[in-house]
Length: 266
Ligand SMILES: [Zn+2]
Image (tube, protein in one colour):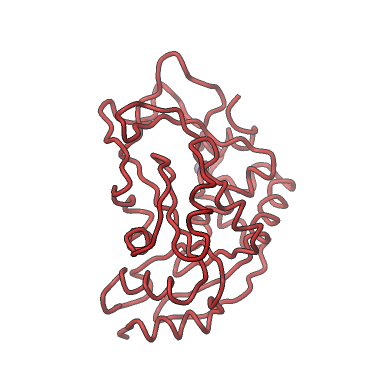
């Protein structure tokens, strides 16, 4: 199947995306062939939704933790984990999105009118109504603040061929469950290394599925497209954690999942 912008817009309409504020997690490949690729998907999303938010995370700025600042319970083993580079790349607003975040997020950040935050590891980009407000809400210490704000505005999570392992909103649900975000270090635009906060491991987030009621599930091209209220993701994350702090862990031995279950860094 060949998808053009018109087919994508019709599909997003069917999925109920018109006039919604949403954070989008998309797999371009899942759709099948799209004329114009990720740029077409980004344009169609921006045209139909009121506001589109995407994670535009980057890993190249990650720096080695300083010797004199090594908090415990921080989701890492300082002796064996490679948490950053001795010569990191300074974050800049035009730095491409990490490959595992996806081409659609990278295309959204490049749309005319899109705005991106300056968190060196967990930046976000937004386009549409109040895009600047959502982006400005983020700080290096509060990477999930834009999600908190969009959730208050009845925002939704949209998965396009992706599962809950990409669901950034569940990280905000973890914060609401009382967990502290992890501390990392990264090089910012001026070349200095800064202490920042980041979300934890999401590899076990598919365990949320039985807790979540979706608003809509449909197919566009070959992709399964799902909409879920952000508040529902937050409620489900808190419920799963309340039932068992390790319920969203990817494995019993994952340092990030273990330390998150313990509440995060001290
Ligand atoms: Zn894990």
